[in-house]
Amino acid sequence: FPVNYGNSPYLGSVTATSNQTISNGAFDEDFLVDLFSLEAGDVTDPIVLRDTVFVFELAEERAENPDTGSFFESYLPFIVQEYSREDLPELVIDDNKLTDNFNTAYNRFILGQ
Image (cartoon, rainbow, N blue to C red; front, side, top):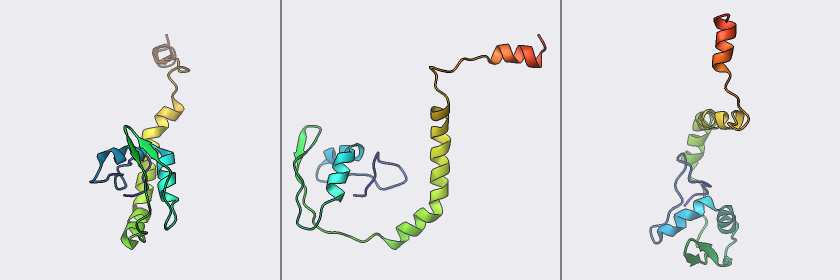
């Protein structure tokens, strides 16, 4: 499975056919760092995901598919724009600090009341 923190829909999902609990690792930074830091012959310390304990060993390394890299280079601007569009309102508008003065401002500046 890919390095995909948060299981972004733009990348392959963190899944394993042998145990679906592994999909929870997509939301655990330490899990991904431990797995993708393994060298040949290394074994992880026990990793707990939900109610299961795992120990992983690096079976093989595979080179990135060249088509994947070129796909992301062309698709990256769209991904960045999409995330910016979704996240910007949450970053800019804090409901705890926002006072809705629309009607007051509309009445004063547009209607002249």
